[in-house]
Image (cartoon, rainbow, N blue to C red; front, top):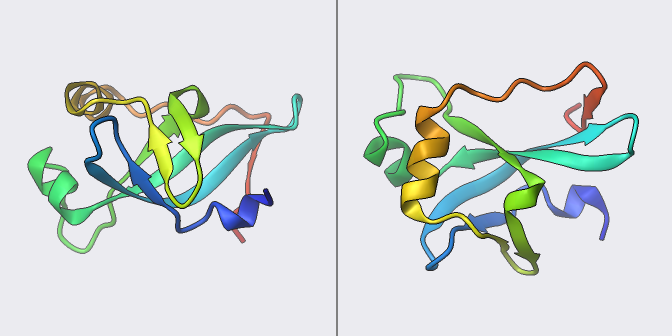
Length: 103
C-alpha cells in the first residue's frame, strides 16, 4: 500500500469507537519505516477529552506499534482508557531523523 492511501483513512479504536482520521505520516529516515501517525481527532473525542480549542485543530501522535490492522479503516489496539492516557501524557516529539509526508 502506498503511504498516501493512508491519509484521510478513518482510525478506529479497540471496541469499534471512532477516533478520527490520519492527517500525517511520519517516517524515520534511518530505518525508512513509518514510525508515527498523526491522527486528527474526531470532534466528539476531542470534546470528551477536553482537547477542543477555539479555531485550533486537535491531533494526536500515535506510534505505529498501536496499529492492529489496515484495511478500509486503520484499526488500533487502543482502548478508550488507553487513549485517554495517550491524550493526557505529553506529546511525543518527532525525532530529528524523521520526515513527514506533509507538503
